[in-house]
Image 1 (spheres, rainbow, N blue to C red):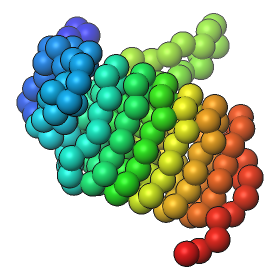
Image 2 (cartoon, one colour):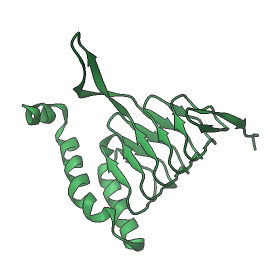
Image 3 (cartoon, rainbow, N blue to C red):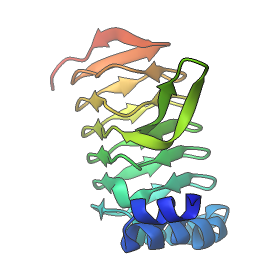
Image 4 (tube, rainbow, N blue to C red):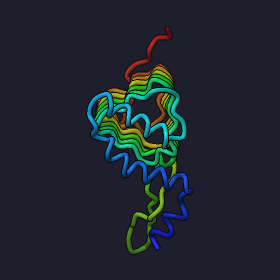
Length: 184
């Protein structure tokens, strides 16, 4: 029953992407050096919805549901990052993501019944949009349903639960505006 439901929710391309993320992805995830970075980029190029140019995907990055991932050129993603693009993640040009950051674009559905609360088997998909020239520091969390404006900085350790205006520096838990950056 669970397998049947899983297969019904995914297209053949999505299923192939998930398999590629599991098997070749496990092989390339820890591959060292420039060869490993090239292999991870090739796998991303094969599985992602769009890749605008070479992407610097460092060792230890976990990418899942990349059929929903669209990235521009000059994408840098550091060690320990987890990206789940099930609900769609759209990344602009020249975006850097620091180590151990988590980007998710879906939430579990929760049902409340008279006797108990439970997590249902499905997901509520919520796209995440990250603009151009954005720097996301280490150990951040960004949830789906957000927009991060162009030329913004998210300070390390931030939990972003609201939209980030363009040219903003935000930080904290929950992330709040620290300052606005001057236009060039």
